[in-house]
Length: 424
Image 1 (cartoon, rainbow, N blue to C red):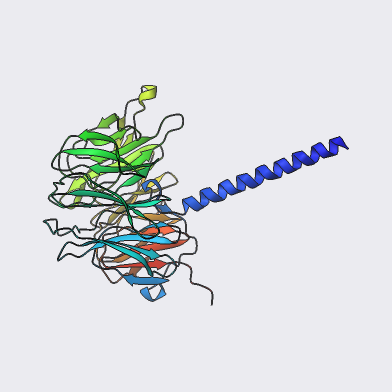
Image 2 (image 1 turned 30 degrees about the horizontal axis):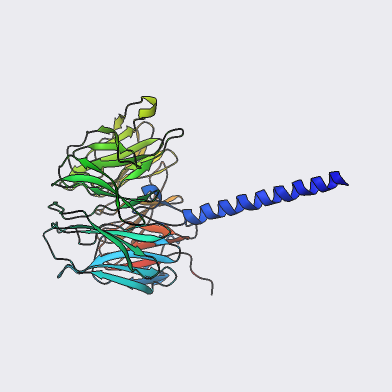
């Protein structure tokens, strides 16, 4: 009898453990559905949406809404809320809108009066993409006089904190996006003037660390994390002055750098196959583009350039990877696929168009929006295959976002949702 009771207890314990494991897996999968920063989880540009239609028109969108003002930032999503920024060009008014992902209706909107100023005609006053965590929305605005970071509540957009990082000196204007790392909001402040990387407490806005940087032309890339088994995570940052560099994300302590860039960094670093892929450029074309193996100070390993990728390479768009392949979308419409381990070219093709937005990979497809507003769909494979071209009917410099099986696209003054059509 006692043996049976003992067996029953073991069975119940096993069932309880399985239930807990299932809950943890479900929680992880739910988190993975969020798109919390520029190009999604860790900037990889990878999403999952198996029901996306291949051929469609604007009439097939789940919804499409007009935004107040214009901008180049990309959408971010948490649960049933989508956040996107815009600005009124004539008076500089900056705006963040919170939309419901089900139908695009506005849940709340916040406006920030700021002055107009000189910038590149290819830039906007709303080019930086917000970042999210479970508690708050983090966004940045900048003028030559002020670099402003703010935290807002998800519920109603009310302000939690704001922090002024001082002047921002960049002849093209501002456009670097924040990220959230373990309770810290990390901001790159790489500019023509005094430069730094700053980490603010996500809950209070208090400065947790600040690392001075050498000044050069303003950088517009967004950092990411490099994680190696058995070693602490590294914050990967790119800029003209420092090239590709790794820092301790908790303290800001520089770990290594490879000053291999001779032009400004606009495209963001990508982590794939244990390496960092990053480039720089100017004049509308990419210049040096490298695959870097990060250093590991704890093991005495130095950072090294594994190989250079020959031109054409991207200047503004960030690459995306799949199964040992890296796909590079060139600003002037030349796409190429390389072997991540060796850099060997698998294919190269002129697709046409000009690109400021970056590609994302949704399952086995690559999506990228041209500046003329054409969504190009390619197969994410070692052989070139054009799958579709979709006219979004408005110019765009933004990057798609993917969450909950739906893809969200932003053009200059609209945002739209594309996904499986509801059953009638």
